Length: 379
Image 1 (cartoon, rainbow, N blue to C red):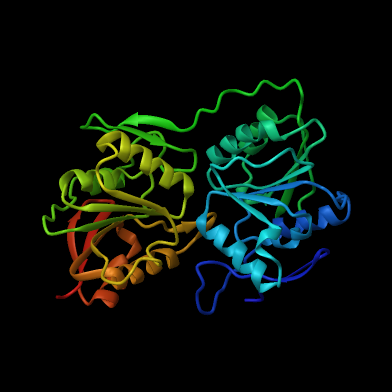
Image 2: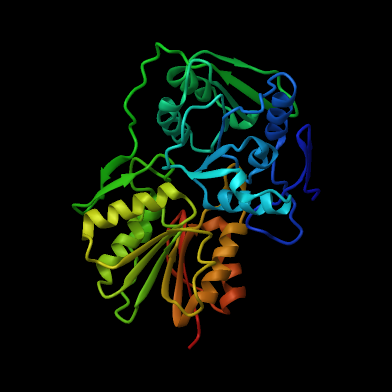
């Protein structure tokens, strides 16, 4: 796949994360190109323009606009790492872009706010509410996305939380939406994080805007919780792709001798997991929380049990490469006799990958929709 982005701002070599051989997808889309073309032609920027970028998947916008010293906010650890990688790949200083997590506060007010539409529209709502102190009546908000990822609710959210909107013509199946802040708008209190009581317990579960199944326990997790193992010999348990941390929390309850490691590439997921764990079990119970690329930075032979409900999409792209990477690195960090437990939809055929990596894979439980698989390291 050609990895050279050519736009009025220059030519930039861009790669996706996680890296994989013979990559078939680009690190940008037509909405990125459309937005950059607009900024170079109809929406020209003064040299001192203050720019905030939201949800820039692999850093295409941040790299192309790095000479403005933009701030770039994302809920994705991989997005931040890709931006750093692509800045370096193009000989640009890492500090030419200020990288912010989704829960950080940007600095100052902005002339332009550039937003790529996230997969979860609750995240867009949360972002727009958090942005209010950083907007003025002259701020221009430009939202870019592929038409298939731009439901009518995007316009409604923008008009409710920002002000009047106009749209561009479609170009290469992409569209831009322009929003102008209305000084008279009434912005509601931020409804996130939302909370619910975990069924069968007294635990109150908090969920930030970009956490999967924010409002209730999803059916896959419910099935997984019914079959979580008790491993008295386990010293380190990993909740891999932890989301709000419910699986790791209940694993900690059933395995009080173990340290639980909560890992997710979403900053909001990790923050939710930590809040939920601390509220339920207090500050004295040992646990570790980290945003990261799965367990790639864990030491070999550092885990006894890994519990995983892997994602099968990256933003709007569906695929199994993230799950396969999770399984591969899980094999590397498990101690002899350690186990990886995976839940997934029956049609995903995770057992094929697990058998190839571990040499064995057994079914713990299954129902009409989900299967729980167990792979064990010999020893």
